Image 1 (tube, rainbow, N blue to C red):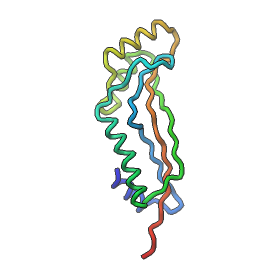
Image 2 (image 1 turned 90 degrees about the vertical axis):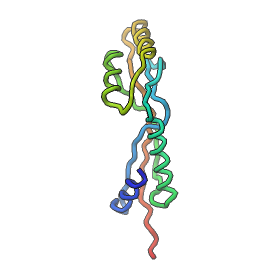
Image 3 (image 1 turned 180 degrees about the horizontal axis):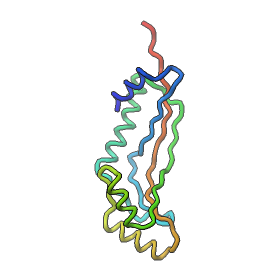
Image 4 (image 1 turned 30 degrees about the vertical axis):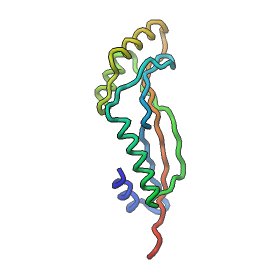
Length: 137
């Protein structure tokens, strides 16, 4: 990703910006009615997401960009059922899965709280970077 940021620095207009959005390395949670019943196993996701944060820090340290603004927020993926949510995670996330014990806890919680929402929550960071002009030789 550092190479991508270097390339972006070469092509972004001096008055422009680069927006980076990526999940944090926090484990995504499976929630029923806002209560955590488990986590999503995401393989090497936390390592890749931490790597994105490191790449941004390196680009800043290299003097390519400065942070104009950074915001953290939660991104929710809702499902009508535990099987729908598990299928969605398995088919759309790289190495993502909800294990059987978490699915069972979700199923039990949904039965005890009719109408409760079922969701996966990811913590995400959005960073607006503006290019730092290279000093003239």
